[in-house]
Image (cartoon, rainbow, N blue to C red; front, side, top):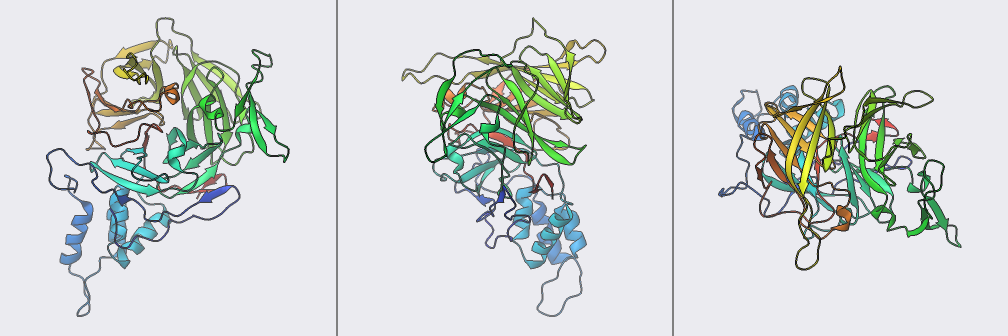
Length: 469
């Protein structure tokens, strides 16, 4: 996009307690040499540009003007069209002229911008710089750059992506929510408040190391070890999710972590993490009133977090014949729960001794029968698209997202052991759910091998305190 005159800093970027928003220097600046369709000589998207249509309208709509003054479209008309745009197009439109920028600002302040955005791939690149995130647009087949706040994104782990935010772990193992579009950053409760982490202080009273883990379910299970602050994230955090809590208007972060893939949660603004009743091998979460969590054997638990005491209900039990390499839980297009199983092939280490990332070979779909709780396999998702990885799993209508391929799954690698394979090539691509054929998302690979890229649904959401502005 690289507007010659970028729009003003996004609204809501101010210091507020532990919440910090850093304005982007140049929001969504196009990368030099950004990816485009193979064989195309033009860096522009192949689809019809809404901004281009508006430019034509601006020169043809009969509006009374004074001599020498270009005609202006009514702000109401601009806002109507702007409200349908993908965020990259919208930011470009805001740089055209003062009146378009005003319509852009009014649209954002009123919250009337469309919520359905096509997911993009968020990643880092060594050539882009430590504080720069790259955003690959599936609609335009090109890359944009975003400058993010400290600490440098390239030195963080990316453990989740939900509602336009990514959940990161920095080099002292602390977690933050970051909105790459607005630049807002919010600190989550300290890792020292987690059930299994005990801080060790130096002579000055600062945290120096961690003792981890110290106990399990109120019982000692092995001798604790002393872990450096920068090394705890190699062992502790696995995957995180951000959910809207409609009952309170606040937001909840659910965290799957070691030991044994347990589950903790915290509301945005809380001072500490809360461990949910211990269970092992959780793989994925989904929230719709209740918080649902699924383990590697397909057992589904539902947590009610609204009362003074948390309750858990088993939706379906263990399936002994069900053992995928990864599993996701998502709302089915027709309602109810859909389990998505991912199977991988583990290759031998390369000649240089670097372990290879396991490669996705097959994705299977099961619906949960409401009556019996049993899994019923289905062979396709007609006119729908899946997004799998460290993101909140998505099942989208291909009719609403014409740039996406129906009955396909777009995936990034999210194996919890990949932190031990930082130099290995990532498992990222697109798989046909009908015949299991795979293709690269883009070639050649654009991203650094670490941190592992994630899917991001761009959003203008700005958090104020423990609620949304």
